[in-house]
Length: 247
Image (cartoon, rainbow, N blue to C red; front, side):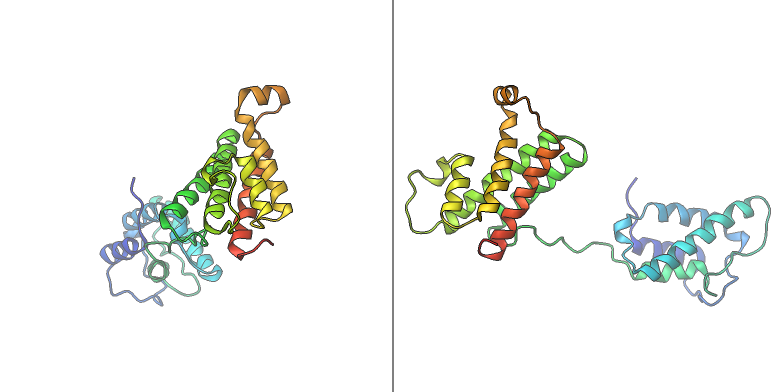
């Protein structure tokens, strides 16, 4: 079922209850409106919670208005003819309408997690991997979260080496360096702090667990801890690069 937008709630209320309502008319919602109330509550259930972007006081009022309708509807179905109670002396239907007018149909785009990367294709690709790592983490897919975070660490260090690695030549091209070498070289060139290197080394060790032989020898497997280690390294590296210098 498609999501319902706040503007569609406003249009539905105007269509079902009329567009010339007065929110001070606190006895306007009658038992004759029970079909419309039922339809409105069903539509409100389909509005994504993230779009109900109200401050605490408005959200409380919105919740009270919905609760009034949700509790009155069963009474009407049993023959009660008393009107729905008001909330703060205001008509609950019109109040819902006016609160929905405060909400946007679209959320603003999220702040980039890696704003220091100017190349949009590179930044968006890495941010997608970070999101995918958290998706796996929340699904308790520890190996997937560990591997994805490890990929981001490697890509961030590679980007830093290419973008601001200094004038000292590399023994190998950055693209040919393994993660271990990238971590060591990044610290050597002052791109990350020793503390950041420690986190990155932990993430490197966690990522190595995807190799069956190493996992067998160590007796360790990917876990919540390895995923968190790798994600912690991602964010520490990002913080240091965002600041323009090691923290």
